[in-house]
Length: 272
Image (cartoon, rainbow, N blue to C red; front, side, top):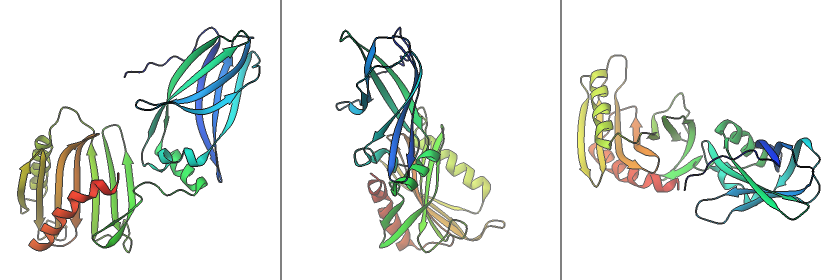
């Protein structure tokens, strides 16, 4: 279903819809211009593709002609899942307007709530980000970096005992938001780039089946780099080409490489 923005008609001009939070409280604001002097109420909905629309707010009283800024309280327990999810959230908001003759009209717009705002929302509402910590290989891993851009997204985790600057082990979920490229094309770019950066790298294509490429590499030191190793999975997922990988700042044994290859197959489900 393709939605189109409709933000103005003879009754109302919809200028902005946005969220704000305070400790333990979330509010939604509606900014616009009333053009019809007979408006007696409005309702706001979150428009969903596969389920019924969610009522966000309503006002049953006359609206004066001119600019308005309305504020409504949102029930946190029913609206926290999207705040917990790391990354930019896009929502379609519909507005139903009613006049004193019982007639109605509808407007709709798309809004974006960026990760920088959602971090503050989580702080105010005492919520933990989805995937902020995961339990894998008998240990807890903490999220230390999250990047969400138009072309790619990246989540990085280290063991809770380590830091982002001085890590020895790292888990990464890297999404290349491309439609035309295939996992094999991304794989070729990664392989050629690594071999150019470090000619003595030992690169191993382990398997390529069912659209998933499993590979690993390691080197005993490259220029000023200390010995390092990586185990990776590359496949097409919901939002693009996924590169799920485990990095270690040392060489890795065959047994450990096999174990981490199996663990990486479990990692995406940990974040669902």
